Image (cartoon, rainbow, N blue to C red; front, side, top):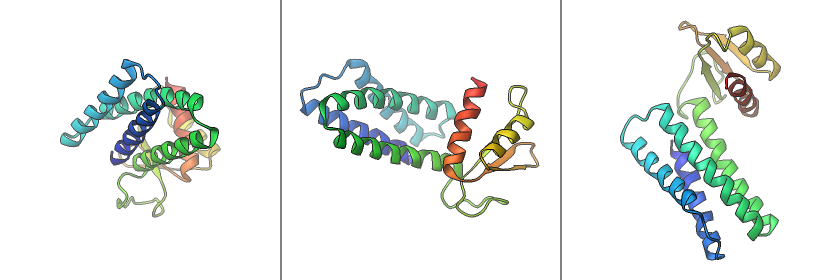
Amino acid sequence: MGHTVVVWKILEELLTKLRKQDIQIPTNILEDLRTAKSLIEISYSTNAPKETIAKIEAYTTNVEAYLINQAQKSFDPNTVDEWLKRIEYANSQIVNEKTTGSKNQFVVGVPRGQPWIRIETNDKLSEEYVSKLAEKWHLTVNKQTDDRLMIHGQLNDIKTFIKQITASIT
């Protein structure tokens, strides 16, 4: 969750830089950034449900899209690339945090330091489909005692795998 704060702070900093360029930021973008901050603060004080974290990411993604678009109009390409790299790095840390749990967590059957996710299969997401997709991305699948699937491998492969799984169930 700490890396979500980093993304939020980067976006706030970019917004400030754009305002210094006399770029007018729409009210809905400012409200989305404030809402994301409020949800981040709430999630620290409570055990936030996954929906709250998803909402934070939706708000920050919306703000990011708008601000990067404005930055491309206002800054030179190298400056925009630097902002994109900062945001991408912070987002990759969020994905790593999600896929590996906490940094010090040890998971039986997964090589130390290797990212992993657990997937619960259902009618829309069969075990065979998940296994075939994982194999396509050279990921290892282990069935756990609670019938969930533990998938681990290279971070970029897991990211791609997650995107394809998400696309297939929406």
